[in-house]
Length: 377
Length: 121
View 1 (tube, chains in turn blue, purple):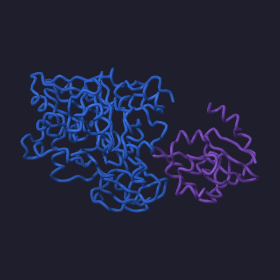
View 2: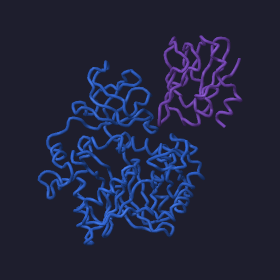
View 3: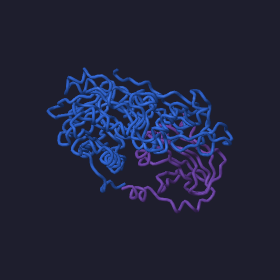
């Protein structure tokens, strides 16, 4: 497969040096896995620490023209259902850009650091997200940070590895964000990630990225991890993949993401609604939804994958939903999946049937995550 | 005993009218560690090019195609509990199925070891 016409992140040469199997992803040449393979990389992150290149994701700075970070937060609330005003300095929060139908245009992290909101958005959506903000947030300066790479260091030994280069990270809690020097590079570090493990995301100037990455890989028990394990780790952690588990046709309530909509934005809240699709989303919070995103555990060892239809019966008479992500979970040591089912089947332990190669595979609805989160609260 | 290969990265060890079928070392490396192997029921008759088995890695499912017309005799039962055997020894203990060849004339259309080596070079 040719990767000649693809964009490269600042770590492209490092991936090649490390033996990364490069594949096209969202217009970039990215490592699917390295020599150890997806299963071993996945287990390494759960037991030690893994370094991911997520530089393809969009990093965007949003500042109010007035200079007031409260004004920037209020402006961003016109596009997302989370309480952005309440984010304290040095903290971050998960939210979604919504459309007029209540569907999800993208999901993102929003951090507040001094006079600035720092956003991390999905690679495939970043151009549209930036255009949306530049059109809608006329009272703000929306600045894509093109010259920065993004590294994720994840796993129970991530703190130890990063602290050897930036000791202050030991004092950070889950979802804290801080500007810190790492080996002389001016970084913005958040204690967060996409694996369910403790860990950090490190925004680093592009020119310093390769050096910082090599320094991290030189720490004991840190290995490079590709996109394959990133996907199986996030699936076991019950986290959504944009474009698979959530998209423009799914609302945050259908996607079981209502925990990310704080009271202040709900009916009767101090800043109720005011984001695209608020009437629909707030109505769903009050009245419920017809379908919900759930975890699914199938019998046997055959992975049930995205797209598989779900039924209430083994004869496929009564369709009740479909699988949106599925794989073999290396830590669970069984197939794990998530998907949407009619609300009557959304309670844990509800029996359902997935269609796999024409056969009915019995499955049960399972609580998410499949692997308990180990964040440092 | 004659060893054949296919463009779909399978090998076929023919003894008389039966054959043992597996995937090549090259294919095993490309797929990564397997988590599940499923062979169609013994007695299933297939034409060349039809699916006789499915192998799954963490990431994706891939079909194994019948190299020639024939009938499934048995799947490798050891793979039910240890599918990773295909990854560690694809051309030995990680064989996938035994197969009865019903149209031996089609064997001449397959690759020999040298032609397969050239294909993946």
